[in-house]
Amino acid sequence: MMVAFIDEHRDGQGVESICKALPIAPSTYYEHKAQNADTTKLSPRRKRDTTLREAIKRVWETNFSVYGARKVWHQLKREGYEVARCTVERLMRQMGLQGVVRGKKKRTTIASDKDIRPLDLVRREFHADRPNQLWVADFTYVATWTGFVYVAFVIDVFSRMIVGWRAARSMTAELTLDALEQALWARKVKGNLIHHSDRGSQYLAIRYSDRLLEAGIDASVGTVGDGYDNAMAESINGLFKAEVIHRRGPWRNLDVVEYATLEWVDWFNNRRLLEPIGNIPQRSLRRYTILSKKVWP
Image 1: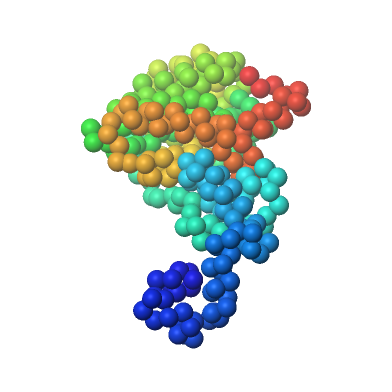
Image 2: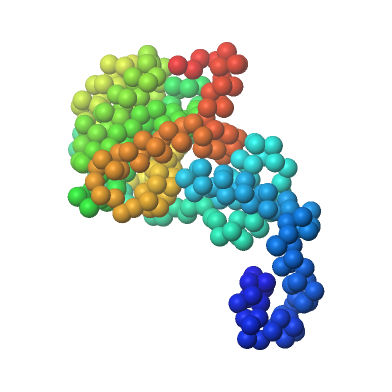
């Protein structure tokens, strides 16, 4: 920063006079300029910083430009770089790179008028010991130039994998049912599974409930408007909004949102580092599960 300031004002004020007012010696400034002109004169630390900057920028850009210093640091370690987290933080600050910050969420839950509702079988314990033990489901909204678009997700709690998703122009049971059908097709489950959602009318619709029953899946619902009772699904919605919707808008229509969601789900399921499973991609957890001879459809 000080070198750039000196470069900007040196013609009018002179290097020596500016350095008197700044905590930098003229010799340090000239050394810095000489090193920039001839990379062979760089100090070992600056040479390493140059290499790390290139790696940091690559990791940040190839992961939707959403990673903060912690995620970049974990990915660099996975690639074999021996680097301190504070070094990554320092270099990202210098490069002007930062991760996304989640915003507030507008609720889409509309309580069903049904008198009989499934019980809460999860009770905020979002933990699974195997795939297809517990799924959570929710949907969120995206404002476009042609009106709202709604995106529904079904997530396997064991690995945080998105096993089903769908985008539509209306928040009906058709939207959530299509996402469920994709999950059922992908995983081909036959019972021994809990499906948890909020008490929205889309999830308590007769067609949705019948489809769960037909697949041998136990339905579970939380409290109306209580994000903690469906916290994991709410968290995925938050990541989707922060990493895609808020960063890449404005959105024209359903088709554009649908394609962006497809890209993000592919990255999320195959390459994104997830802290709850040890800062590894889900595909790594899947590989471990297969090698451990555990069932993974």
